[in-house]
Length: 385
Ligand SMILES: C[S@@+](CC[C@H](N)C(=O)[O-])C[C@H]1O[C@@H](n2cnc3c(N)ncnc32)[C@H](O)[C@@H]1O
Image (cartoon, rainbow, N blue to C red; front, side, top):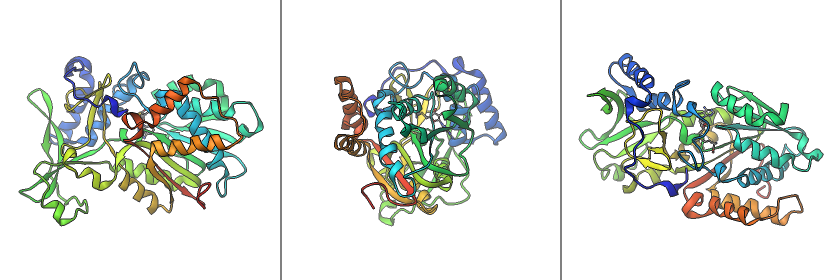
């Protein structure tokens, strides 16, 4: 989501029960089964992904100008063209990958737009070079897979699908704004108890509400003692074990090449600043941001900043080596410079494309909050050996 849309606004989606009584009933049933509460992560899983009812199951048209939020993909085809160039000229010539087939595995493909842009760029000109690429979309949802199949039909069997990450990948595993869409847990600092207390979701007086969950094991954030002593009561910190586990699984699958994600997020210590005391979880609807996180299940996007420290650590634990950990603007700028140095084919710079590049890199759009985390197996990338 572009940070430009991050302004508080009173415009509200339709009221809770009107929109999806069935989804509300299912979440209430889960709360009942859970003894009166579920974790926020269970609530989010249902609100976003409940088959046929969750926010990401309803329509492909939530990304872009007419939807709820913008992503780098919705800025235009340039983002895919730059990634295609990077895949071909950097990943494709890195140690151990300079010849033979190269698999591009995307997760979080939503409506398949990025895949379309990347494939079109790789296959442009119809030369032999394009023949080495095979594109796999990892998509657990049958609904979203159908949207993607429709959009990508013309690429025939060059695109394949699987519900889960394949066992071995030789090439690149990529995602844009995937990890911020994973469910998160919500933890609140209690000054009385001097520990983090998990907040879950209950049903109270006709609406979903927050409730403290029993927390048998203490949550360890590895906080310096001096920081713990100044954290105000109720300071909120989310964590996403799902995102970390996903990255670890992808890292294990990567046999040779690069695992890369582009997203907005923070390093661990950046979460613990006064401006983040309410946590980073937000609800998006029609390019507006809401603090009311529980009133519109299925109708608003729920998204939290990625903890890049935790995710990166998971990749290192699986034996990957660092490639990039930097702002999206810097990453894309380097690709741009590379296209200008090389004699390779890259489309001409129309006014529209220059504008798209500015949107992808300008601090007020996708340039500041968005970062790139890339880790590799089997050698350093081009220019870094
Ligand atoms: C914020 S959208 C980003 C869509 C697109 N990548 C873009 O940048 O425009 C996140 C997407 O990730 C999908 N997603 C969530 N969990 C996933 C998983 N485990 N595997 C694959 N996709 C997933 C969501 O359904 C949604 O389509």
